[in-house]
Length: 68
Image (cartoon, rainbow, N blue to C red; front, top):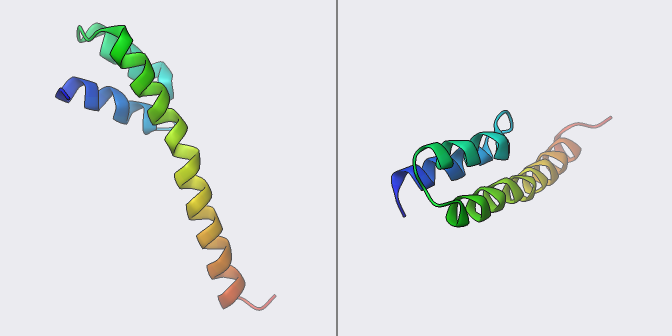
């Protein structure tokens, strides 16, 4: 995996740029769209999984430590 492909995928993780930043970056660095589009979409789909896991853990922690 090239460094530019990895940067494209990481740009898709960031909520500000998402796929709108990762795909153009990959395209303008000369990577084939057949590789860039699926990886950027996969990178964008992984973010909600991590967010859900983090929010569930945070909710359990707050529920255990705060007595409202």
